Image (cartoon, rainbow over all chains, first blue to last red; front, side, top):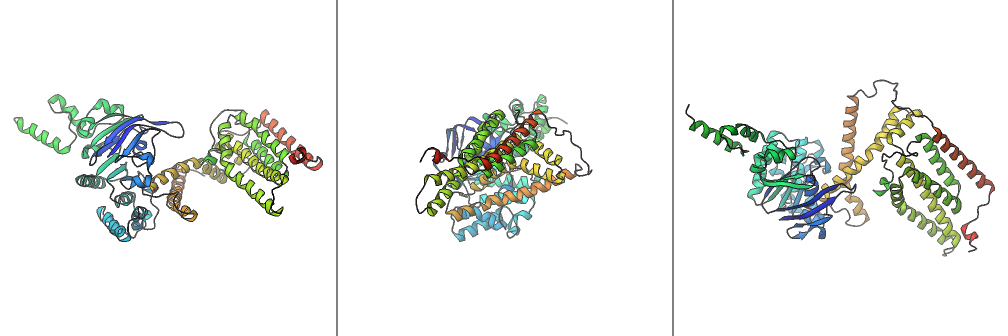
Amino acid sequence: MIEAVDVHYSYANKVEALKGVSLTVKDGEFLAIMGQNGAGKSTFVKHFNGLLKPASGKVLVDGVETTKTSVAALARNVGFVFQNPDHQLFSETVEEEIAFALKNFGFAPDVVESRVTWALELLSLTQYRKTSPFLLSGGERKRVALASVLAWDPQTLILDEPTIGQDHEQKEKLTQFIVQMQSQGKTVVIVTHDVEFVAECNPRVVLMKEGKIVAQGPGKDILTNPQILAESSIVLPQIAQVFTKLSPLGFPKNVIDIYEAEKIILKAKESKPQ
Amino acid sequence: MSVFDGLKFRKVYSPIHNLDPRVKFVYVISIFAVAIIFSQIIPLLFLFILQVPFVLLARVQRQWVRSLRGAAFLATVIFAVNVGTSFFYAGYKVTPPAVESALALTLRFVVLVESFSVFFLTTSPDHLGLALEESHVPYEFAFAFTTAVRFVPVLAEEAQTIMDAQKARGLELEKGGLLKRIRNYVPVLIPLIVSAIRRSLELAEAMESRAWGATKKRTNLYSLKLHKGDYALLAITIGIIISSVYIRLYVPIPTVVHLLHL
């Protein structure tokens, strides 16, 4: 469980990035943090594994205050996948890249081996085991970065802009993957601009603006509220746009799920005489 | 990183910022040369104090102090090495003249750092490139130089992100002995170098697609012209050089130890 209590943070150039943010992320929860550029999303999640320490207020990870422990100790339970995989890839082979963190955490060699195999399998990278990560495509590099964090099986996974540069198929896989994590009771926090992706996964949505949380709740409520979204310059998901336009005909406004939309439309068709 | 902070240009308008970069460079090189011809503490102290009005006029005192603080570590090393060497040569004792000469050499280093710091703090990369070009340095080199200067803060920021990404994977930079600590930086340096190379290739493509180098003869929107202030600084510089050489050759410089009858 991650608890942030009235977190304030300023960068060295005196820019106040967080102005009192409080949030509780329960174990097994799926959370999407959204908001425009510079809203403080990335700054905020960097507090979850201690990369940044609050200037005032506090962040507790499983009851331990982040200021009282190291990033390495926190990282064991909170995996953080950065936006740009090129900021972390350095090994000669994909295999070594994935083993890097496992070795840092002091896993036994045979465990490292089996975890690497498992992570490669999970993200369909097995064929690239001995390939240099620098020779892979952008999407594949992103998967290697993800695999290198998943390998140590952290309880919480933070993904910063996971959908950027991914084609539709990869996004689809990512969705399935998050669902799978959920079924194992893992906590997933994503930071994203991708409103369609969020609509599809339907997590709890936290909306940030200028260093504060402005709204939070189920995706279904937040992503269908034009006033709240406009404030954070986020557009409604396409399905919600359609249903907002259809609302004068008696359709509900708060629909973001494609299957729910289908059901409502079919029901409307049946109830109307031809 | 604090040393680099002391060299980072910030846009401020001041009489010093408006000076011609070529003249400023000549001034800095002259201070450099004068600092090297003296090894006594009094003239070096004078040179040190001479920079202060420039710093105050340019209103960069805070960054300037930061760059001096960044140089403090090396200055300490220089002082310690000099005192240490004389300690062994003088038969295992520390003599006041030895301490004074060690202090003087340290001060010389500080003078070099502060004058360069003033130069870089008050000269924009654009001005610097223009100065190089007008000094008949080939445009390719001038451009490469200004680009390199401009990308320093970008790379510093990127290095921070990479360090964060690797720390998030359990890397502990401060762990282990000296050799281990150096090796800890491999996972930071490789992505940094790779991304710098990748960025430079992208920059080259972007430049070429905007017809970089299409004409051999380039013209500039701004051209450098010497103004009153520049002539004044030039006169001051020449004055400093002449008087320094004169003092060095004909005036006996007393040492502090001598003055205090130690």
